[in-house]
Every structure is written in C-alpha cells, then in structure tokens.
Image 1 (cartoon, one colour):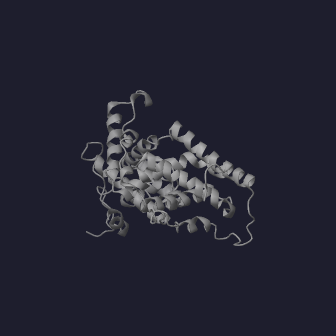
Image 2 (tube, one colour; image 1 turned 90 degrees about the vertical axis):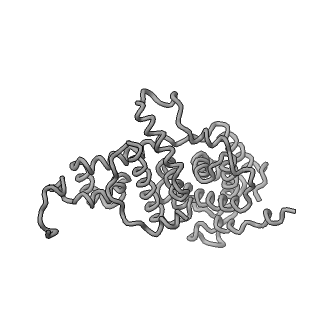
Image 3 (cartoon, chains in turn yellow, brown; image 1 turned 135 degrees about the vertical axis):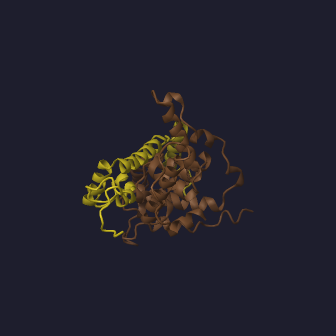
Length: 97
Length: 220
C-alpha cells in the first residue's frame, strides 16, 4: 500500500497538523515547554485533541507532578549548622586555606 | 602520614578560572568586609539548594553536608575572581569540583547512611490531605522506580524533576553538556513511564525511540 494513501483507521487524529508519531516523539518537550514556541503549539494542539496521545502526556505530567512533591527541604539542624559554618568562614574562625 | 589525602587539590584551579572573561591580573583584592558581604549576598542564599543537590549526588546526609561545607570554603576563596553573574551556576560548578575531590579521598565508613531510607521513603500521612489509595500507590511506585534507575539517569531526575534545577544548572553540576542532560532526562522519564505498565498504572507506552550512544555511557 502506498504511504500516501489515506487510511482513516491508522491515525485517530486525521485532522491534526502533525501525526501521532511526531507528537509522541515530542511529548517531553511539551512537558518541559522546551523548544520553538510555534512548533510547541502544534505538538500541544495535537496532544490536546488526540485522546490516545493526550493520555501519554497526562501520564508524564502525573509522573513529574509526583516527583516535584518529593523535593525535600534542608532540615533545620543542617541548615543551622551550615549557616554557622558560613558565619565562621566570614569571621575568620574557620580556616579557609 | 596522610600524604596522599593532603595533596593539593588540582581542581581548585577550575574554581579560580570559572570566569574566563575576567581580566586576569587586574582583579583588585577584596577586603575582608567586602568578601564577607559578597558571601552573604551571593552564597548564603543558595545554601539550601546546594545541600539538596549534594544529597542527590552523594545519597548520604553526612557527605552532602561535607560537600556543601567544602563548596562554601572554595566559594569564599574564589569570590575575588567571580563576576557576580549567575551565582547558582558558579556555585554548582564549585560543588561539582568539591564532590569530585571528596570522591578521591572518600572514607568507606561514610558510604552507607541508614538515615537515607528515611529521606527517600514515602511521605507520611500528615504531609497529604485526602489522597486516594491509588495515588498513594502511584507515588510510592514512582519513588521506587526512581531508585532503580542507573545512577546517571537517577541523578538528572533528582536534579531537574525533584529539585527543580534547569537543564543548564544540572549540566553545571554534572559537568556534562546540556544536550546530555536533556537526553538522559528524557530517557529516564521514559523508563519510569514504561515501569508503570506492568504495575497497572498506565497503558503500554508507544514504540521506543532508537537508542542513543548516551544510554551506553549511563549504563556503564
């Protein structure tokens, strides 16, 4: 079969400007807003309009959302010790060389 | 006599020549007061970020604190040659050198730290409000999947996705090109995403992209 022959069953997003393979290749660029704005808009539009591709973006968004929440704070005691260490450097109480 | 461990760290030179555009000999000596003021202004506000980054790299609280202390010392010494632009990038480069140097003289007793299990374990109930059991499972699963990534992949995920560093900042810490950071990050997330499938958290991922040379490097 010629590659140019339209096959309505092959791509659920026949009306989109980019095909699924292209959009899926750039899911993480959309996730990170990484790249040229015009191209990003095309990929994003496809991902929003095509349910299977959109689901792929949602999975990555869910993963990165969970990861963001795992950022730990520097514990107070460590923070205090490092602040004290910095003060000692500035006052010359900590040998710097 | 600890001759080897006390050898002058040659990578100190890297800290001192970070700003290649600065006039080499014309830099005026800072007074103690100026140095202290610059330290307060440029270095101190980044201390917490430095600690989080150090923890991501060392995987050990005691080591992370050591690395940050060494970073603060080196930063203080190098303030006279720093132009004041992008202090975080400058400090992350210093941190990388400090960590590399520490690695060379690492003591075996510091290699494991039981506290890490607590650091990286699932959050407690009080951290969350009304989160579904499925979300709990998903969160725990992702956390475990991150732990199982090869170090080169895990590091970029921890630096960028968990600690919020930019690609460039992560590249500064790891001493690799920004493109390598992006490539590792994308492939690491892809692994996390694929790991979800057998656990029932998502449909099968679309076909994999061709492997890159960087994978080989990370996998060792």
